[in-house]
Length: 449
Image (tube, rainbow, N blue to C red; front, side, top):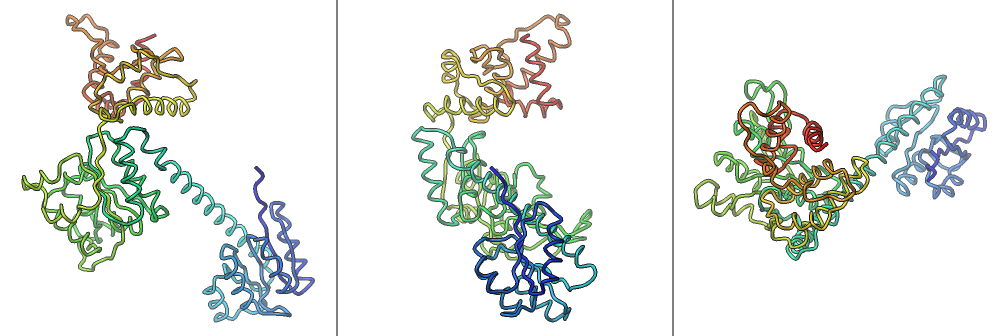
């Protein structure tokens, strides 16, 4: 597909100056130039949607001020550069306020100034298009069909609840076992809602030390505490206009829960070291693998915060309760992993399908993903066989007398044991063993060769 040419309209009643501007801009072969000598002819061609219009402030049939207003009303995406012999500061300010990108006086350096201004505009337009494209890609990535994959009744019920969450800003509480995809649901809600063009900000409460979580959420002023060398914006402010996702909310210290409650009720936060409240407007989505009502009964979660968060509940079913979804998901993960790593597409043999279906998957979707990715890496065939599906990685071990194993065999034994303890999560095992994910894949593949 051919890229649209970068179109510039030149509006100048002086024939000599018109030719000068057209010649200057035509030095760049990427620019498509069209010239006009009055405002009336320009308006007739405005439907062609140029990227830039260079506009003489004084024209025979109108003024640059009137024409600028008409252009902004008809197409706000067109960037206007005013060009004039006068440099009255009040005029410049008023025109910039009305939306002109720049104001250039007719002087000896107009060629360089004009080319630089056009270059800056073009770069800005390119960046804007990249952002729009990226947002579309993200929205597509987190569409329901690409995010919450499955055909089971349980997962279709989740789809229905997500749809209901999109029409309002109601707080959403996502619950479910570890590995069921709570953050994916939160992103699906955000990127399909009216807040999709604003920030999606994640805070994993369990991963942040308790002494730092308040600063993380609300920010701090310079000098608020030792080490606070500059003002820091908190996650509430970062999420303004968008969505704040509080993962593992059940792990929050009860001493901080009252401050979170106030922020939610008042829709404002106070940075550490400040007395000035800052208004925030962010949608709240929380996730937990705990029963918050039970945590309230135990005195570990504030009852008033519990009821403040009690919006739309979405409970994600464990993989073992999702009927045939396990095979649908396995096929999806295999296809994506093969594509990402430029591996010929592989599929599960019938025996492998039976092995996967018989497993309960305590690590849920996350465990399934790690298992099939490892299977694709280990397999030498187009079909994944049961021996490629390392559901219980340590089953292949047997105790060896001391000193009878080689160093590489010990490495393999340690890796497989770590995988078993972490539900075959390759990345978790790599982090624990302080080695690369590719190293684990390579060592296990070498064992098979």
